[in-house]
Image (cartoon, rainbow, N blue to C red; front, side, top):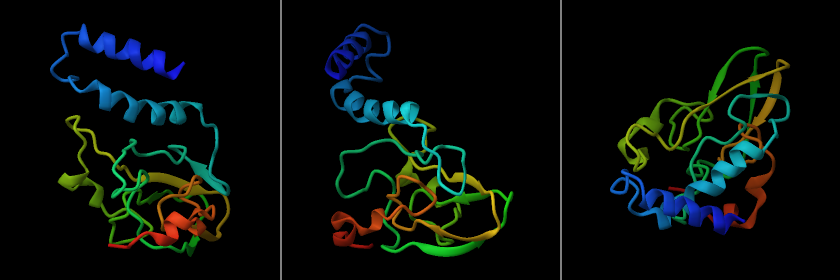
Length: 163
């Protein structure tokens, strides 16, 4: 099913006037399509709060040097007091100096995708329902972003070298 969709998409791109822009569809479509399907089919919300972007703020990549969900900042979560109803912006790229919150580091040139004016990592806006201490993810690989779901315990996260 997925292969036939990719075949049709490639054929459409080849026959379009945008052929020069999408000349490398054999790499582009398989990288973007799975993430797009996940983005629109997932109904998960972060436990303990409202997650505006559903925890998915990045595009897919095959480069093993750069994790799909951002650079691993720390291999442990952080427990932090959050106020109910206040809007926070979770750092999705892993480069913020104000972890776990965004400081605008995602706007750096090396985060720009091949598509003009599209930034790979966007901060994740969120609020919490109760004023209390919450565990926020610092490994950036959680499936319940911005909240920790224990993903940092995976062997690949433990083995990752922090830069």
